[in-house]
Image (cartoon, rainbow, N blue to C red; front, side, top):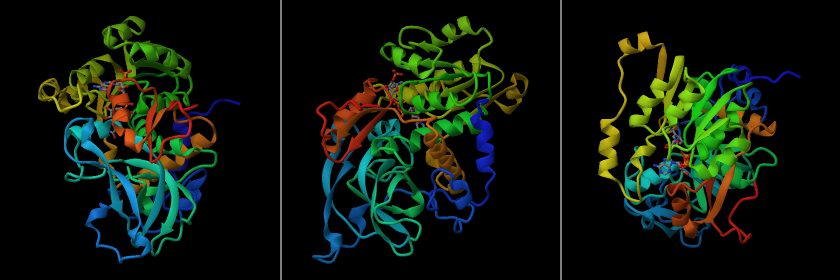
Length: 416
Ligand SMILES: NC(=O)c1ccc[n+]([C@@H]2O[C@H](COP(=O)([O-])OP(=O)(O)OC[C@H]3O[C@@H](n4cnc5c(N)ncnc54)[C@H](OP(=O)(O)O)[C@@H]3O)[C@@H](O)[C@H]2O)c1
């Protein structure tokens, strides 16, 4: 049976009208049909409500239960994230209350801790853009979820807690067979990788892609998604110790960017360059990406990892990244036959239908066994500093996960 290209399959899913993301009972596999009957467009994605601002609950009521939450208490090093106790509250109308089983750590959380990430609440606040868990209570008016449903949750912040109350449209039913750790690794990385590769990149069979930070969260997602399209050649940059993993994952040309010039290495293998560069680095790497493109090529800039050089904000790195920022005029682009795109999931919070369609397609791909989040390691809340260190010291292969309680296994390395 001929292999169907993901970009073709996707068009048929996206063709369904009137989707609201996460709003239908089956915002998972085969959800497109059900989502067509979704309610009027739900309100945009927002941070989980900051619990301390709620009115004090009635003494003795169910609301008074306490739970633990990670709180960013100041900008700086790992010690700025502290485990604190918070008083819970019942979900408000349109919300569900979720018992959190696993949370995703994102590069943006390292940036947020240093105070260089936009759109976060004022300090102190609870970080966390994604989690997975079980619905424990329904707010008034919620009809398309039930207590006990397993869900993935997306928000701008606020999800690193044992219990979160979130608008129902920020929850997505977990597909059958998915672990909580996998579910906490799916939304941010795979939505991002999917949209930059397929919506902006328009990846097609026989093309070539350069994936930076290839062994990280978005990187591993991007590689798996590239593999859903026929005969795509993947170049991937990562630290040398991760190259065996990259080769096993389907990267034809792993490159150690720490010891060699990746652009030169790519030119040796492919003198004309590549069709798509996924650029999470920014600064001078965006210009390098642009220069590496073949005619009709696209660079998608979706991060500024070059800003992060240590535990605390580096003014030197900020100045260098800003100074080296790539810029080009529309007129110059005409004669280059290339495209420059910018992507930030954190600014798509009002695009509920768009994101819902992407999640539905990702769940389809998971159910078909075509994608599977790669979990690097799992850390209890009280070891959040070690979890952040794992990512910041470039040790992770796949996603770093936080869980409220210590996992039973002595080793934190996940089986998958
Ligand atoms: N725009 C969006 O909506 C969006 C959404 C999600 C993520 N992103 C971006 O995508 C990138 C990847 O995010 P992620 O959460 O999946 O993280 P990640 O790739 O797991 O990040 C950690 C890995 O990145 C590599 N790395 C490269 N430069 C680094 C630096 N300066 N400091 C620390 N590690 C560095 C390291 O591996 P090697 O040294 O082996 O490469 C490290 O193990 C980030 O730039 C992030 O901001 C953007």
